Image 1 (tube, rainbow, N blue to C red):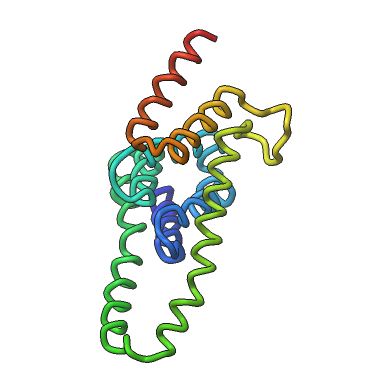
Image 2: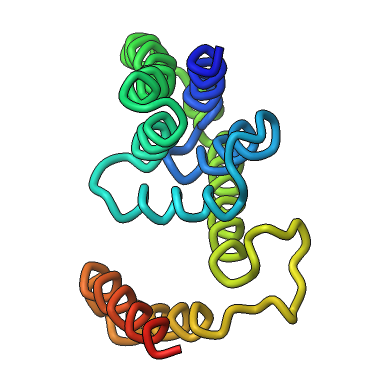
Length: 187
């Protein structure tokens, strides 16, 4: 029953995650944490961190990690298939219709009107990840007393390194991991 529940959850994620992997994060959180209560918010935050660190699309990485965590190798396969199947079918259909009708003005209007929704989904995912990283993950509301100082300093340092000094994201990821590990070992 768990395998079937996981498959349906990631089928929904794959079907409605318009805009890429980051747009899928709120949907995955909804299905795994809020609807089926299969993980806590802390476990979900760890999952997102691992999924972002590993190569590949974040939604597929997340599906594989959730499946492995909850049902082993069969769970990983089922969750990954559930996440991939809708996208595969939709991409085939859209590619067919796009190349057939790409010169119609209505097609360009529809694509242009979808952009704000995609930006909203990605922004929602970014804010969700930021709040999970900087505040206690188990609580539903953000409380200023629960602010994590080390994570906040790492966020500011990483943000400055990326925006001001145009540092390599790979170096920033490894540097943040190293500094965070040392900071937690000393505290």
